[in-house]
Amino acid sequence: MIEIISKTKDYVIIYKPPGVPSQSDPSGDTDAMTACSMLLRENGEPDILYLIHRLDRVVGGLIVFARNKKSAATLSCLVAEHRITKEYFAVVEGCPDGGIMKDYIYKDQALGKAFVTDRKRNGVKEAELEYSTLSTVDCDGRSVSLVRIKLKTGRFHQIRAQFSSRKMPLIGDRKYGSRDFKAKMPALFATGLVFQFNGKEVSATRLPSLTDYPWSLFEEEKYVD
Image 1 (tube, rainbow, N blue to C red):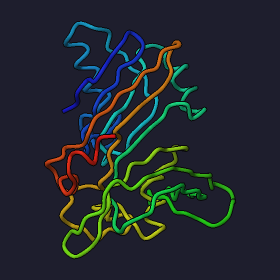
Image 2 (spheres, rainbow, N blue to C red; image 1 turned 30 degrees about the vertical axis):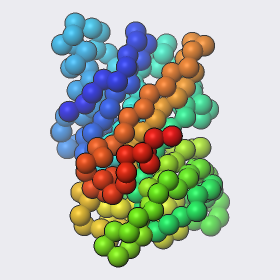
Image 3 (cartoon, rainbow, N blue to C red; image 1 turned 120 degrees about the vertical axis):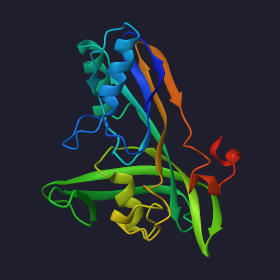
Image 4 (cartoon, one colour; image 1 turned 90 degrees about the vertical axis):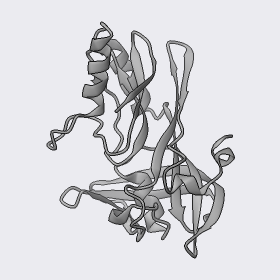
């Protein structure tokens, strides 16, 4: 289900598969946080974890959990100050040039969806990301591109909403306009985490399953810096 990538007495970094909730939710499905606690307990280790950030259920990739209150406060501060570098891979429709996206984003609670808006108002937050296009291929007569994204802010559905607003929805993200029914879930993957903790740099990387569509459309070398 999940995989522990690295751990210390203060934090644990895991891989969360797509389709698994980050924390418990009304579905009752086993979530990543609970599964990680179970693994730690099976190894005879303290199993208390503190949530620092989340990934959407449909998004796979890396998450860090704190293992005590002190580290939870430290890591939460890093998140609030945007000092945890989060990088993603996505496969999008079209052939974008790369660059920076800056928008105002509004979260519609009733629809469970984010919308890009052209003006600041109540409930609207600024959203920014930087991305580069790694490869573009033809897929069934249309262009699709592998992009690498560095988040500057961490808004609800930010990546999905920002690319969709530019008519470049993520492959398989039918909630945001994709007409691709072959992909089971949106093609978005949290591939990297980097942060400073107690004076040391912590980094972790993980690739999506390159045998799965649409990741399989691109050569493995395209995913490696």
